[in-house]
Image (cartoon, rainbow, N blue to C red; front, side, top):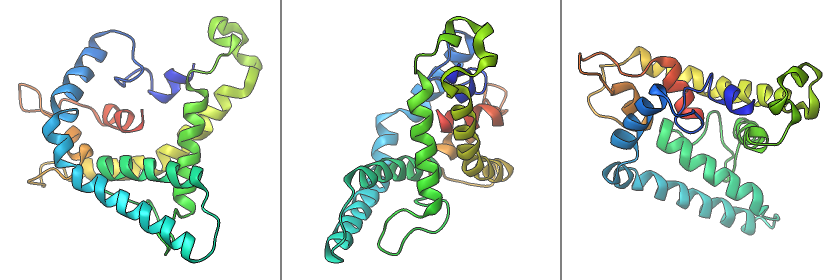
Length: 200
C-alpha cells in the first residue's frame, strides 16, 4: 500500500515491480545517475554538507547547547541528498548556526514518516477489503507525509522543467533526469516520473 502511494503508482525504480517501467527507470538510473563519474562530480557537494554539519555541531558546543545527534545526522543525510538532487541545502531559511530551519525539520520528519510506514506490516495489504477501516493508519500517515514532501519538491521540479534546454551544464541529479532524451530527441522521462524518482 505504502509503496504504491510513495511511487505514484509504481513509477519509481526503488519500489516498482519488474515491468517495462522498471526496466526503463533502471536503464536511466544506471546509465545516467549511479555512475562513478557522477558520484565523483558531486563529491564537492557532499563535502560541503559535511563541513556544514561540523560547523553546526561546533556552534552547538560553543554555545553550550546539547547536541542532539539524531537531529544532526538526520539533517545531514537530508542535506546531502537535497544538495545532490536539487542543489539546495535548505528549502527555506536555515538557522544561523547551520542548523535546520522549520521547513527542513518538517521535510525530514515527513521523509522518515514515509520510510517508517513504507514496508510496515498491515493486514490490509493482504486483504484489500480492510483498507476502508484504516487499520494502523499507515495510509493516512503516508498521504500526509507525501503531501509535505511534494509541497517542497514539486515547485522546484516544475520550475526546472520549464527552463529545460536553457541550461548548458547539469548541476545536480534533477538536471540530469530532465535532460535525458530518447532516440528521437524528446524527453525520456515525464514530469511525473521525474517527481517520483526524486522522492523515492
